[in-house]
Structure formats: C-alpha cells, structure tokens
Length: 404
Image (cartoon, rainbow, N blue to C red; front, side):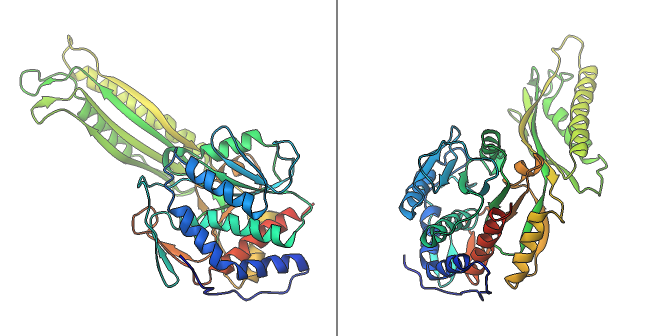
C-alpha cells in the first residue's frame, strides 16, 4: 500500500538545527510512517502473544540504524543506537515507549485505506504508537541527532486488559532509574496524561453443594451470594474527589433452570486516583464478600456443607500523579502550544502509570492524527495533521533528553 504525503504541520524555527532537520525528515517520510502503521497493525498481537509483532519491530529498528536490539525476559523489545555496551540501560536515560499488544484475537487483522483514513482493529491503539517509535528512530538516525542523555526506545507487552502493565513493570524493575519516560499511545496531539488512574480487579467465586431446586431447598445458593455481593457493592458510597469507580463487570454461574447452582462468580473493577481510596475499596470488597458468605451459611441447613468464597486478584495497576508544574509536564505543555495546539492535562491508566507511581517523571501522549472506535473492529485513524503529532512527540522526547 502506497501513501502520498497528506498534511504537513507548520514548522517553527528551532535553536537546534539538527532537530529542525529531524522534524523535516518526519515530514518527508510520512508515507513510510503510515505504511509501517498499516503493516504492524496487520500482525496479530493479543495480550500475552506479542512475539511476532516484537520480531517485526526489531527488524525495522535494525534496518533503520538502531542495531542494539534486545528482548527481555517478559518479551519487551528494547532498542538503542549504540552497540558494544551492556544491556543495562544507563541511569538518567530517557525512555520512549509504545505497547505492542491489542485487545483483539483476530489472526490477521485487515487494514484498509480511504484517502487519509485508515480502518482496522488496532490501527490507532497501538499501531499508531508503534509507527511513531519507528518514525522517531529514523529521524534521529538519519540526522545523527545527539542529545546529552541517551534516548532508549521500547515496545512493551501486557499493557491492555489483564496484561496489567506487565511489560512496563518489568522495564522499570530491571533498568537503572530513568530521567523520564514518555509513553506514546494511540492517536491525538493535545492530551498530556500526567495522572495515573489506579485499578484493582478481582474474580469473586462461590462454591457449594448444589442440588435440586425443590428437593434440596435450604442449601446455600452461590448465585444468590454473587447477586447479593453485586447489590451490596453497588450501594457503596464512593467519593467524588478523587474520582473513584467500583464496577461489577461480569457475572455468571449455575447449571440449569431447575438446579441450585454448585458455583457462581463475578468480576469487579475498582479505580481511583488515590492509593488510600484504593486500599479502602479492597478492604470494603473483602469485608462484603466475607459478610455475605457468613449470612448465606447462617440461613442454610445445619447439615449442609458450608458455602465457600474466594477472592482472586486479576490486576493491580498503580495510581499517582506527576505535578502539573514539573519540568516534563511544563515542557510538554510548551511544545504542544508551539505546535499550534491547545493542550489538555488528563488522567488515564497507561504504561506511564508505572514510572509515575515510582516517582519517575513520566507522561503519556498521542502520536498525532485523529482516531475512533477504539477497542472495536471498526477502529479508524485519520492522518489529517498527523505529522504535527509526530513533531510534538519528537520535540518532547528530545527536550527531555537535553536537560541535565
């Protein structure tokens, strides 16, 4: 698939002439960037199965001129320009990351082009972010752009859903402390995510003897227990500030219309910007499950086996915030404005959440253009002004790597 250059941004003057050349390189190679975006999107990468996409990205990095490419124990891809060094990244490096995985399980996602619009599952999230990493790598290598701090590019696994930010957790545990982390996720050029929305997820299971709905009346009912927990959680008064949610997302169980179920389960998603609130929610959910289990056992026949409950963690994403007046956020705000865009500070759960929670300056940004239908088969990306977002991302990364 071939693309023509669609829309170039207005280029401001830069004190660093090499950076200006790098931005011009992004303009000149936009067709290649879009081609990469389509090609990487066509490689299936469900959470936990990102290896084929990581291998493709590794080949592209090496071809571009970033030969020091490694895959870590959980499957993250790490690309560096310099060879002959240890695999441990020097302290004070600037990391620019994009996640490999998608929410889709299709074996070969289809991507189509209609003028400036690309359509296909994952074309934005995160085909756009991965293509942006390659575009930045190409611009840095082609212009031999040098920065006081090393720039490390990484493609992470396990960002979506039950991946639980597994890849970024591994990167931050293994690396020496970075100077800053910039996560590139999806389309857009105005948002600056500097607050990390924490989340905890649990599967709550109930098991009992089961039996006949008429003959064995009085035996504890796991479905009734699950329904009681769902009702009780819905009644919990949540704080408005910080914003907090507690959602029963799935529920199931039972054998037939005329049976007392042997088992039932529900899944719960809790989110907040406050670690204190998250701890309160976990304690409250556990107390609710224990109370309802006791109540159900009190109501059933004495000679029946007790109803058992189990609360299994499914995810734990950290929360935190990078101050709006921190150097990294102020730099991102200034660059966004200089690109002619009105910036918006935001909160979300992204790969940036992990370094933020560790006290490392980190933000998440989009890679330009516009998109919609995220996490659906009708996902789309429109590259109108897309290069402007690449300019913005490039400048934010380079400015972070130019600070002492």
